[in-house]
Every structure is written in structure tokens, then in C-alpha cells.
Amino acid sequence: MHTYRSHTCGQLRASDAGQKARLSGWIHRKRDHGNLVFIDLRDHYGITQCVVDISSPVFKVLEKCRPESVICVTGDVVIRKEDNANPNLPTGEIELVVSEAEVLSEADTLPLQVAADFEQPEETRLRYRFLDLRREKLHKNMLLRSQVIASCRRRMIEQGFVEYQTPILTASSPEGARDFLVPSRLHPGQFYALPQAPQQFKQLLMVSGFDRYFQIAPCFRDEDSRADRSPGEFYQLDFEMAFVTQDDVFAAIEPVLQGVFEEFSNGRTVTPAPFPRIPYAESMLKYGSDKPDLRNPLIITDVTDIFTGSGFGIFANAIERGAVVRAIPAPGAATKPRSWFDKMNGWAREIGLPGIGFITYTTEGPKGAIAKNLDEDRINALKSTVGVKDGDVIFFVCEKKGKVEKFAGQVRTKICEQLDLLEKNAFRFCWITDFPMFELDEETNQVIFSHNPFSMPQGGMDALLNKDPLEINAYQYDIVCNGIELSSGAM
Image 1 (tube, rainbow, N blue to C red):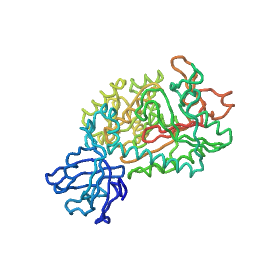
Image 2 (cartoon, helix red, strand yellow):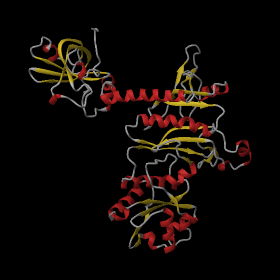
Image 3 (cartoon, rainbow, N blue to C red):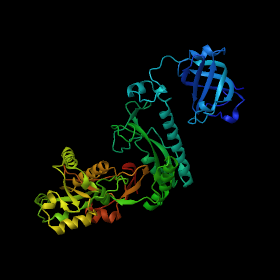
Image 4 (cartoon, rainbow, N blue to C red):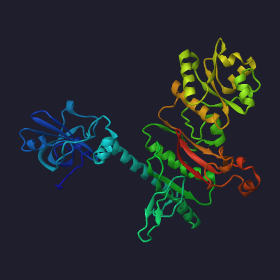
């Protein structure tokens, strides 16, 4: 028999009953019943229950072992009694009756309980990271990360891409953050930069004729931490293609993304390819964001024309000064109490709006301060334009363009949360396309690059030479899932 194990701790089944087996692993939990000691023995592959009774010569050895001690045990595999079986464990039908035991590494009293169900303090977890990584949640996360990377790699190769590794010690290639620098031993006073992205190297591969490149690329950026990635360094699925259009890029990567998400979705639905494509201007209008969460069914509508010259002076006067009005529906909200509308108004002030107007559509007719100051034709036009019915409410945001999108988007999200409209157990993808190439800097009044300067303008050189810069769109695109920008790209 092998020195340390004949099986892993996740391998034994009822069919192995009657065999002798040897296991090595960590003591996950220990239950002392006086004459019996039960040990849940854990390794990378799973947990097996081991039992030793007081008559065994190894009873005293195992009785004094603390959790997370490493032991090697040998014994007979037996079927558990039916009322003692654990259906939640793959090995739950059997247990190992221990006849031999060796303590390979004895644990001290633990500063962090590996088997605990409650969350540990972050400072403790990071100080004792070698224990923290033994916890089931983190162990699964590490495995998931590895499996996702393997799935991405397999799918990219199936798409005809070839994986290349690009240099880590390089010259600076800014991507919007500060570089991490490494001093050079051979050239005192000079430094290498860690790459913020493999941008220059992958383009070097393209002009060298390698055609389809990909890499699970490490990126190093000295920037503040973000909710969606680790500070300092992260890995990205990076790829480049030669002699292709934007449609070719989408067609190549959509099966990879859809396949990976479906493979690890745990029953959640995934947007089928081809993913919806939403121009930037449309996304800002309908969703108030260039990272729309399509699980939220609410659509924002521009209703500036309906309020222009209307009897509702607050909006009509603001429109004359350059403001626009956006409408956000709240399905079924007409039955909400007055206090709910007051809270919405208070919340609006907290985010920087002077308040939030609304019309409530009931079977008795429209209600609210705005409805009182609008004629019937405009009220009906709002109802049909926004697509609401009796029992629904329309909220309004009136602000200058450039600000109104953000506020309307926040209101859309808030209403969705309040009415519990968000689609559950789903991954909803979309492409955001046609980003503006340039924008006007409000402080300097200068035209600057908007999203990504390293991209092709729509219309080519003719557009750059002859068109108003603020009207030029670029071949730039983001892939968004559930309101999170997963990646950006450009032709």
C-alpha cells in the first residue's frame, strides 16, 4: 500500500466496502463521544468520515489531535448505518474504521476556524491566509477560477486562436493608470515597467503576421481598488485579430463568453448569441448608463417635446434654458401609500435632484401636481409614449443633457429595486457600440478623446478631416453583463 494514501478523501464509495484503505489529510472536524471519536478528514478532493473506538491502540493518538492537524490513517471501509448516512457528502454512505494512525503534523490552537460557518474578520483572514485558503468557500473559488481559465483557453483554441506569452519586464505603455516600476540591475538609475496591458506586444504580433492571438494576460496598474477587480494586478482574456471587421470580433468571442457562462451558471439563464447590440447614445437614453443592466425591464423615455410650452412651468421654463425631460415608468406603483412617494422624493434630494415629479394613472384619472398643470392631450401623450396603463406611475427627471442621463439611470435602478422587478438567476449580455470618438472637456472647453484614442473613427480619415469632431463615432465596444463592464475593445 502507498506510504500516504490508497485513495483520496473524496473517492471512497459504498462499492469499496470491505476493502482496506489509507487516507491522508487535515482534520476538518472532530466529535468526541467518549468511547468513540469521529473525524472528518479533508483533502483537496473531499471529506471522509473516520471513526475509532476506545479499544483501539490509536484512540489516544487521535483523541488529542486538534482540528487542522495532518494525519495518515489506515483502516477498513464499512457501510454506515442508514440513519447515520450523510446524503450531502459523496462519501456519505461509508466511513473508515481506523486501525492505524500517524500524526504527520500537529496543529496548535487555531487563530481562525477553518470549518466555521460564520465569516471571519478580514484582518485575521489575511494575516493567516494559509488557513483562510483551506476554507471551503475559498477553495471552491480557487478551483472555479482555474476551471474558467481552462474553459476560456479551450474555447479560444477551438475558435482558431493561438496562445502567445508577451514580456512582463517592458517599457511603459500607459492604459490610464500609473505604472509599477522595477529597477534595472544592469542599467543603474533606469527602470522597467510592468505592463498595464499587452497592447503594444499583441499589435506587434499582428503586424508580424500571426493573425489570431490570445493570452490569459496579467495586467499591472497602480490604481485605487475597484469593486470588480483586485487592486494592483488582474488577469484578462486578451485577444487580437487581423483582417477582420467588428462583426467578426463579436462572432468570435460570443460563443466563448456564452459557453463559459453556461458551463458555470449553476442553472441560471444566459443570453443566447448573438448578444444585443446597443449604440452608446441609445443606451444612455434608454438606460441612463453605458453599462445597462438588462435584467431591469424599465425603459427611460425622452418626453421633452410633450412638456415644451406646457402649463407645468417648472419643466417648461427649464426646457427653454436647455434642459431635457426623461420619464421612467413604475408599473403597479399607483397602489403605493403616500409615504412611499415621500421617501422617493427624499431619496432624490440625497442624490442631488431638487425632487422628483410623478403622475399617477388611476381608473379615476391622472393624479399629482404635474397632472394638475397639464392638459388632457399631453397627459394622454405621456401615457402612450411611455407605455403605461392605469395603475402605473411615471416619474420624471428634468436636467441638462449630460446630467439627466445619470439621474434618470439612478431613478430607473431605484424603482426596479423598490418594486422588485429585477430578473432573478440570469446573466444578461449586451454590446455597447458606437462610442463618440471625442467629447468636450467642460473645464477647458477643449475637444478630447472620449473613450479610447487607439481606435478607428467611423468614416475614416475623411471623417477626421471634414466632420465636426463631436459628431464622429468610433469602432469601439464594451461587453456588458448584468450592469458590469466585463471588457472593452476597438478596431
